[in-house]
Length: 274
Image (cartoon, rainbow, N blue to C red; front, side, top):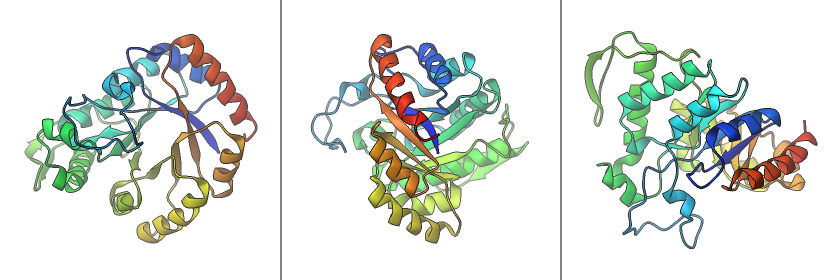
């Protein structure tokens, strides 16, 4: 089983470069970072975790700048969005950002994607929450065309462009792996457009039957990465038993000294299972 880190990178925590170096030094295989462009002051959408929305949601840095900075100071670390809110992103700009990250990192980009929960946030981007699932699917299909075709074009319900040139192309062919976030409602998207399931803190005992259902929907084995995982050996052992490919420990956003102490503890837990 592989071990990585999921976190919110903000202006109040460890810097992206220091974080990247620390993960490489401790033999973590990946970094997945959250994205929120902004948080509307007047918000009706309830926080999925319950209670007040943590301040880290308000203060996230741009994911592709963070991951590019980490790429510059690391050699092996996979660099993932966890998750990029595709319903709020222009597909042409995003295709260029993903491909650029893959190029400058030497083929280490992972495109973790999600639909999103904050309706007011997506409405500010001109997205209708009622159709966001179809929108995400279509934007992913359009990005695949941009990554794989010299002259790419797309004509759909939400995305429409005549033949265009777009470079760079990703280093990894046909494109960086797409990790699809969400619950069971995301299984058809994984089957059609995804390379892996990015499951959010699902306990091992619940995950096992869900993996079976995913296999049925997809018609194939689908690798599973679980993010937001506590550094508890008993929990990690449960994920190993159900065949999870990777766990992403949840790293609390904090200044560098505290972050390094937390990473030391997580690295010690991971070493037990390698």
